[in-house]
Image 1: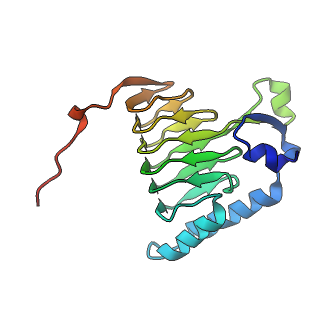
Image 2: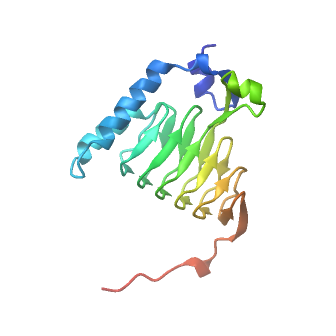
Image 3: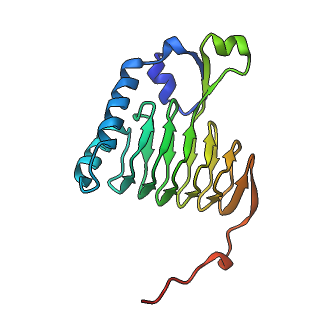
Length: 195
């Protein structure tokens, strides 16, 4: 088993910084840089770059620059995905984003972590766990999604939340650490303007 097999498995792992495939990280940095230099009217160019960068990129994946990721090959979009400005995805493990996901500005999705023990951390030992964002999820501005988390279908994560544990389907959750506040109900429906 090589490091890519470990990184693309849907399981957590611990590794040394010397195991990092730097050439693949450099490739992702270059593709992100190219993406972030595109003009707003270059939709086809942006789509092509995302297809080259991501492991699976649904045609309805839209990301506003600036965007950064560690590798790209570990990011998988499964339907309409809207990611707003200044998103960072540390995809040292697989990140699956379900259809109709809305990710607000400044969100950090971080599979990667560091050893808690100071000596191990100084020696470059880190951890990684996969993240799954279910369909119809909305993640509010400046939220952080930590490694190993699954967010259930139809849930809403409040702005500024730090999600360290799984969030069930169909709820509003917020805070640091993030916790379930209430279910999503019919009372949450809004009436758009009739113009």
